[in-house]
Length: 103
Image 1: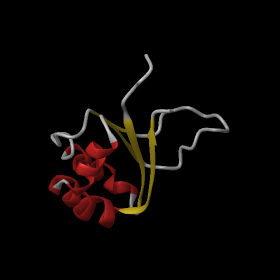
Image 2: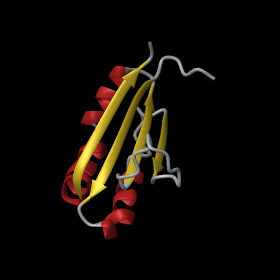
Image 3: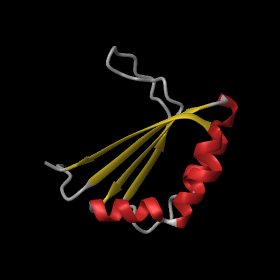
Image 4: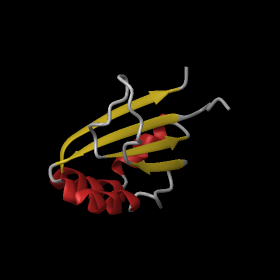
């Protein structure tokens, strides 16, 4: 099925301390009730080993939104702001975001 009218927000997190993985995942779960999110996936690297697969991150977050405006609203949602301040910034050494829209 081809996804249409979808804004994809994919975030990869690298932890400062690997022992904080569950804490970061708990923080990511606080995002679930945000009304602007259509679908959410919280994951860790799969056991796939090919040259093109980057397994260097610790946790990933994949969010689907109905529009760029919905993603913009998510960015300023107080729950998201608290997640960034209380989990992502203190726990992560690196965060990489890839946003995409339909063609």
